[in-house]
Length: 404
Image (cartoon, rainbow, N blue to C red; front, side):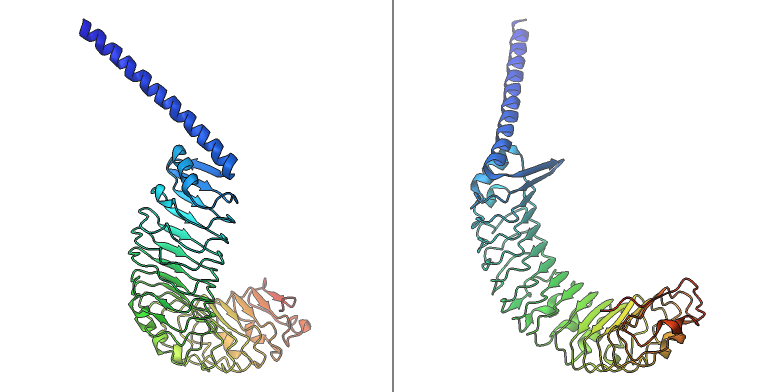
């Protein structure tokens, strides 16, 4: 009897302790939330297991105090410090091992990633448009990191991140002072964006990126070709606008390439160097000054073909090959006169002849059953000339307003 009474008293005592702890925890959590808002103007959102913490306060110089308060509330998974003007150090980040995403957009005072190394949980780091950021050596030993975005870090001159075994997406767009790029340490990359990195002369280790699907080096104007590109057998999207390429054999051998964007190449005159691209579905070619003919156009192009601002394009020979083509853009091809090959494109839905000043007749489009819109602004076609046409699609629109 006495033992039963003791057990009952003990149970009530334990229950009381639990209740007190719960009430204390709730009170402490409430106080921490209030301090986060009052001291740092923080934005907190908790939805199930996702804990978002946003802060752009000028009071924030490092992460020690913010982390201490956040941990009294819960386990943050997303930390967004966009626009924090005084943040100069990531010291204290290690106190939040639950973090998966770190967003540091437009943090003007941040120069170094010190404090990042070894974080166990981060899968994403978005450090874009932080114009004074220049030290990447502390971005390392991150076992789960899949995405690293340093786009617009204008002061970045070297890229020294190491030991990122899961890295799949690397974005370095607009890092204009980046002098060298070696990606040999990231064999699992699937996306690599180095567009507008105008100081990079060569990308080392490209040949080892066997899983790469997207490569954008547009406007990386100092690049001397793309050595190793022929090894990128999984590549689907390639953007080489304003990169001078002398030899297209490596690109032409890519078995899975579906989208190719190019422009500004003086060496290309016809599409014969690209005729081997059997998987190509979209081709964007712009401002190639010596481009004169579509001869060799890959037959599989079906979604889009654009040959824009090519003043020496005078022949559409080869256009009859891709019979499934749906969109054709010839904007600004001022040397083009005749377009008879268009008549073979029975699946064509949209045609642009904007600013093709020498194209005066478009009778060839009459029998195209799916053609829905023809853009003719600035062309040599006059509105009165289309009134006598009897198009296969009575709903067709001839748009004379669209012009550049």
